[in-house]
Length: 217
Ligand code: AP5
Image (cartoon, rainbow, N blue to C red; front, side, top):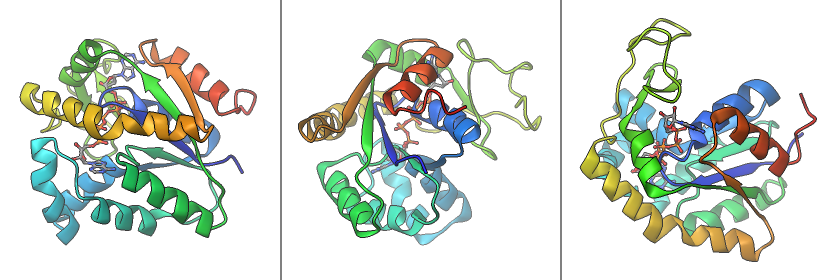
């Protein structure tokens, strides 16, 4: 079984894109806390209602809610790709404790390094299929027919938090609250850094190399 991996990076760095590719190719299980929260919101659960305001404003949902949600998702033997979690020191510590208590070993983190102007361009041009989560970009990975998913023909939408003001807020929050995790994992010898400005296929290659699975497919 491949080990668990944390995809660490700013909004728009390409974590979700890569998690979807590795999930298909290598049998990993993606745990995207953003996707899970959007599912809760669409189903109208208590957690979804509690998270909605934070997400709309581009702020982080409180740690206790997030840690409880991830705990509930951790089952099965497949290696997990954590996408969008942890995002604070408290979440990182809780995740280490949780995985150790389940005998899973400590996860490696891969930091997606990329500049802010490119992040803004990626988020402003992103379109997703809300039913499947499949991600597109109008310029960098366009669907065959604009506004329509290649896989199931469903309509593509832009995320509510991909508006200029909310994007700015999300990037500020990342720098203040999540960026310190790069040092957290580096100090523990569990960090690899990849150049996330490269095209999708190249980033996949670097990511697979970083987590030692480049010969697995
Ligand atoms: P979440 O859904 O996790 O959003 P995010 O972290 O802001 O990340 P994104 O999904 O925006 O970016 P990504 O890195 O996955 O990029 P993608 O692959 O789509 O979180 C949303 C909200 O939920 C948060 O604001 C918060 O409120 C809450 N939340 C979630 N987790 C939380 C937590 N742990 N604690 C507290 N609150 C939490 O790519 C972006 C675009 O670029 C796409 O259009 C894609 O096609 C394109 N692209 C990707 N890779 C490339 C490439 N290599 N070259 C060119 N284009 C590319």
